Amino acid sequence: MTPEDEKTISEWHGENKRNISITCHVSNDDRTETFKAFHGKLSQLSPNVRVNFKKLEDNEAAPSIEIHKRLIYHAIPEGPELIPFLEGLDGSSKGETIEKAAIESPLERKLETPCFFKLFIASQCAFCPKMVKDLTPIAFSNELVSLTIIDAFMFPEMAEPFGIQSVPTLLLNESMRWTGVTPVDEIERVMVNQDPSQLSAGS
Image 1 (cartoon, rainbow, N blue to C red):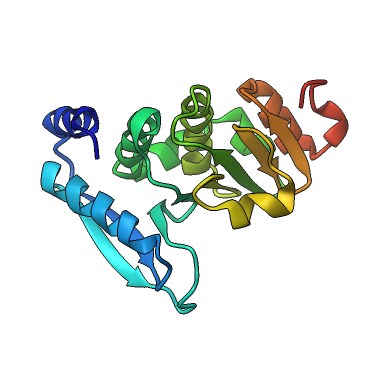
Image 2: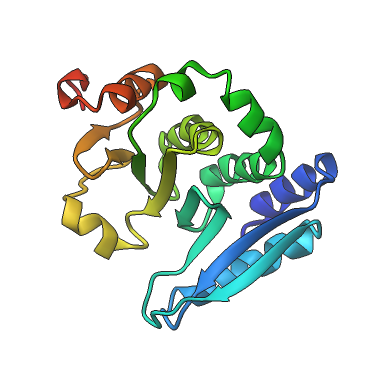
């Protein structure tokens, strides 16, 4: 972790006094050690974040961070990705408030079909943090929505089956795709109708 990231976490901790619990899913995968190191530093700099380590049944399964049952990271949130991650931690600690607000959300009232998002990112991608920032609240506030964030370079075996060539790339139910930063209203429109024809020309 860089000194800049350490400073960001320390400043965030100074403003956030809620107790937060997240889960780090671990296995025999070599990348598990990187996840453990990140969480060790996170807990040191922000003691109110409690990390529960859970051993995966599959010894070779990819490690992950579970902020919320509908928000999973197969990525180490560092550099530009750190602030959206910390904002996600804020959201997880405000769960009841967010769920209540979702009842008033137009998307919540219209959405009938489950939406499983996979967002492929890279740690130094300049545009990826905005997509994470825009999509995270949707995952928190809608029971039918889940978001899995994947570092396409750290987990190439997850990116290759979908032919990921650039980031950010967003998949909805593994059939609809957006590449680059996409307006949230377009994503929500496609979520409701599940109609690929409503994807913009650049998607």
